[in-house]
Image (cartoon, rainbow, N blue to C red):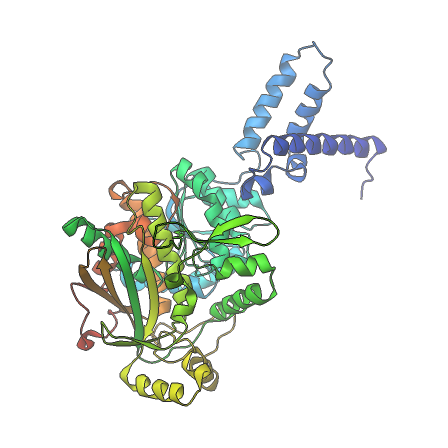
Amino acid sequence: MVQESAAAVGGKDVLAAAASDAAERLQARNAGDQTPLQNKYFNSDMMARYEPLVEAMAKVDAQVEGEEETDALAQLDEHWGKFMDFSWASQWNGKKFDIVFYGASGYQGHLMMQYLKRCVLKSGREQFTFALAGRSASKVAEMRDREFRNTPWEDTPVLSASYDDVVSIIDLVKSAHVIVNIAGPYMLTEGEVLVDACIWCKADYVDVSMEVPWGLRIKELHRYALEAGVMVVPSCCSSAYPDLGVHLLAKKFQDEFGEATRSAVCYCAGGGPAAGISGGALKTRAALGAALSGGSPEAAQALMDPFSLGGFIPQVDRNGVKEVDVQMGTGFVTAKPRAEDQDSNMARVSEDAKLGVWRAPYVNSFFDTRLVRRSNMLQADLANQPYGATLNFMEYAMLPPEKVNSLKQALREGRDAEAFRPIGQYGITVDEEQRLFKLQGKEFRQGEGPSVEDMSDAWTGFFLHAESVNGNQEKCSFIAADGYFETSRVAVEMALTLRFDRERLQYRGGVLTPSIAGGTCFVDRLLRTGVKFKMGGWLESSEYAPPEIGAE
């Protein structure tokens, strides 16, 4: 090894110090307003990697006051421009794809490729370009070869990017019109750097998250996405259906009666063979549990807040005055949420006498209700037209008839714990699912999950009812495939909506929800792929079957 001279080492120390000073000045100028990408990129370590910039800074800083050196300023201007547009370290080849799927080496990557192959590419309904990406190009290529071998898409380009190399994330985003991020659990990653990079580089963003902690992190980027005209759409998964249902019912009230929506409820059901639970889903559940039980009191409080993602509606007394809580010893005042919006309302077995439905806790209700409340807030903020200024939304499992009697018996016998366990998509409790999956060997490892063939006969249903402020009532319902397959459908169709229907969309940017981002254009795409929908009533039990998944 050639030993560096003391002078060379000393020179590098000087450059590192200059980079550190420049980074500190930049960060001080933006104090309190640093975005995730800025924090990751604009620092002394990154600047020190670009030695020509640091040298130019050092030359300008070394000038005597009143002395002007044109060459030094010109060099600084040139290198600063390259640093700001990332070109000094970029490996991007200039090619841009319509859609890039990031995190494609795992189970979600498998599902995305299965959906593309079975439902989109073969149909030829739309010509578009796409690439697959991940931290390890070789692992992504391995998944691509497994899924696309001997098909027209077997040479689909593979890209690599990692949060450890922020410039690779920039290059990834530059290569796409729409990024679909399927690398979860999101709350355990630095995914907000990817979201922020999309905002900087004007690429739209989609993910399949169902994690409140992740939603809390990226909603802080809303105003930047809005200003940049970039659509950031998390939660493009089966949770989109309750969100879309409320959106369509509220639109109908507004269009036909000019009325706001007072309340809405979604009853979730499902059936068919239980395919299993993916390793990623198990990891996400564990992460959410740890965040709730092992995090700070402030974090736990945020997770339990029904309005954590937005849309707060305060409790008011009979005179219209907001009711408040006062923090003892501080005088700090916060408005009280309404009792009807509390999660506890969804945590027990009860009967909806108006609709003749017995209901129970549903596994996704705590997340789905927050998503709909955010949609209501976004409608107010972006269009000054919320679904309803006093909207109440709840979500439950619709109990199958054979379950009703057994749970009634459990309640009569004081077995409350049994009656209050959440129901999953197959119409059985989450505990029963876990026992069944363990018995059948269907608890999969990280990166693995049920095969598409095993889930081909499973279905999910979403049955919604809403009431306007003047008492008008309406129903609608969706019947879709297994939740895992629906995640791939919703994510891909949202990406296509953003890429090809953008001029027809109502909004142009922000951290949005599926319904607010895609609107009726997105619904139309879902229905064209076979999802069943009925406005004006609920689909009959004879239609409780999944859309055809299609052959490989």
